[in-house]
Length: 608
Image 1 (tube, rainbow, N blue to C red):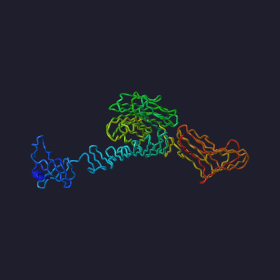
Image 2 (cartoon, rainbow, N blue to C red; image 1 turned 90 degrees about the horizontal axis):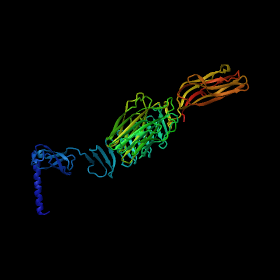
Image 3 (cartoon, helix red, strand yellow; image 1 turned 135 degrees about the horizontal axis):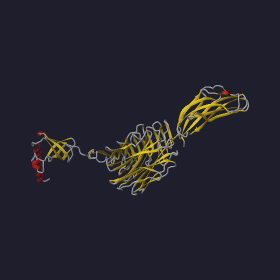
Image 4 (cartoon, one colour; image 1 turned 60 degrees about the horizontal axis):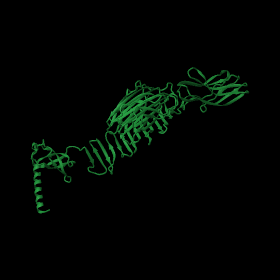
């Protein structure tokens, strides 16, 4: 630096020092004023503040502090940064102090760090977590919390609907929520493969629709409806619902649901149901760049294996189609039948969408209610909250990985003693944007019901259930002469049987003693049944005769299957009788604690 340069620098420093001294000592109209940080000296915790925030108008002479120096030094109280507004407090000889007046909308912790960091975004109301590569690996906002990278597996905690795990294709692989329990989904189709909740466990083969379930008959007496679902792109005007396995009762109720969508306004359209089906609902709404349509049709009864059924739409321009086929089991005293339906349509731009849907008219205790919900949006629904007690049958999503998604699913419940007048549904889309939702609830009267108690079902047909009633003899009977016959030995009274189930009726005698005094003596041990009109012969366990006088000993046991034509209440008894020919004999049946006579009826499960 030359002599002249040093001289100029000294002059500038003296001027600045004088200005600073004047700025600090100058009396201010207010002892607290706002300003903007020009520079920060982090070592000394000193900030230089531009005092230009008290100007009252375009003319600086309007300022009450006119001609006061515009930049003052101040001791930094807390964190403050360049270009941030601060409050400056003047204290005469003690100098000035500066403190932040507000919190920034976006703060990075630690400030200025590269790589791993936390970002507090006030404008979005969110917190983001970034790894060392700067990739977002965690996120919290009012609609969702997740851990993982976009395009890879994500663990998502949905404040509305529970915990969800998605794979890199955005397919829901696992979910845990209070209403639906634990759900594990197929990695290709996304269809639920395992559902476990408070009243049982259900395993589904996504390819065939076959199910095995262990459930409580006491809280889930209605068999899970058979279900199949498919998706299609650019379906044209023909919107198919897939083939599905029925229960084979001859009066199963066949129900078809279809949903379609397009990321465009298609104008007015409507559905025509499949041939042989009765249309029950038809919703089609087109506006604001999204068209969503849905329909429901029923066929009563389903007297053949249900195949593919096609709806026809008046528009061929839909880009997505989801089809659902549902079979409600028949085989009871009265065939299941469509009672009524209710619908609801919602359009929303909110991240969290909630709506109420009325119960179908006339919904009665014991009815089966089926809900079909379809969602069209440029986002995948990340979660939902179903009403308490509703259980998922199946969900399909079309258009994953694109900017237009069609998601739809089926839920069911058996109506309680006092069905609610409406139910509330909440859907979490994760972020704002236009979404259309359509919901349909169908009430089905007289669905088949299993008896109460733990139940194992294969293909939704109940498997063996166990003992229904028994009568046990633990002592030897009287020595009956032929003239005293017939004699009742054991009796079971008033056992309730259900149509469509098979029962084993059996009798076991550990030993009988038959003394034939004369030739051609004959006797029989039978099971008799009373279905309400008196006892009649049902099954003969043993029939013996002796060609010559003598004595015979031996065991006697036998059983027979019985399938009632309808729901029945029956009584059973074991009897000893003389067959027409022969006289002069007597008979005795033995029994003890170790070798008991046993008359019993056992539920062996549904008829396959």
